[in-house]
Image (cartoon, rainbow, N blue to C red; front, top):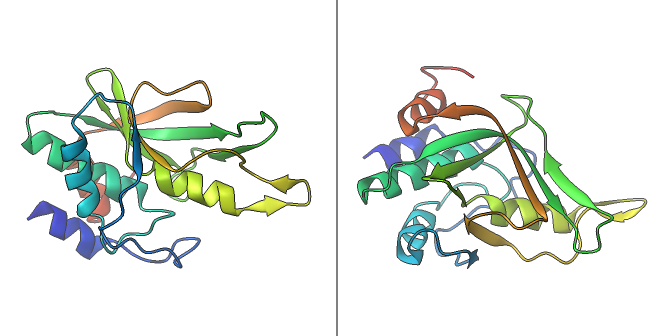
Length: 173
């Protein structure tokens, strides 16, 4: 199965390997573009992936699950910004592949981001001498249009098959 192949090719050489997913996580879902059942089915396949990374893996797995259910999606690579509720902090991923980027899905005209809970959790846990990077946000899966405190900027679009080729080492960014 393609999902198993994606797991085999994943590596744990990311910034923080202390938060490995079990597949039993149940983050809140913000929005109702697609069925909660399908998103939960995708998240159950994340066991062994990093909570704070592997966004391309998660997007590809979610894309497979949604595609099999009749919801074809494209994978977007780019920048993502999460703004604090107080407006004075932000946690983001810039676009500098293969080292730094964020990956999410577009299904129809809706954003599906199953990696967002890890990104928000990471932002909440980091701080500098000015304080925490992120305040007042709950880790959620985005399932629809983003609220004003989330920004997505697409730099590259992939099919699920192209993402799988990158993850398996047969292709590059």
